[in-house]
Length: 58
Image 1 (cartoon, one colour):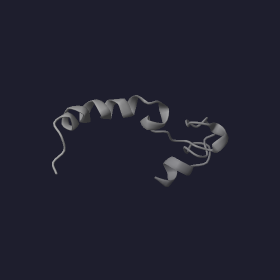
Image 2: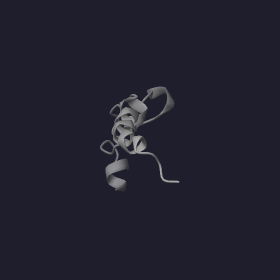
Image 3: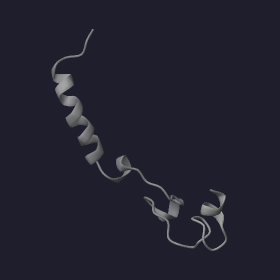
Image 4: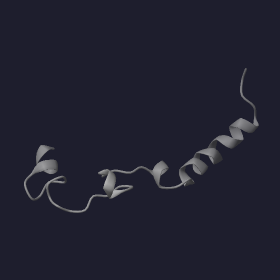
């Protein structure tokens, strides 16, 4: 794992390629679906809506 991440000139962090993230200025290199758009929340809401319509147990 250390080689994959830090090998001089080849590793993820030392290879020099652009990193993916929300904003390069914040140094991020990882982003998840909830950070990209509201679609993730909508997907979850669609799955839970039928359960909520049935009512929650007391």
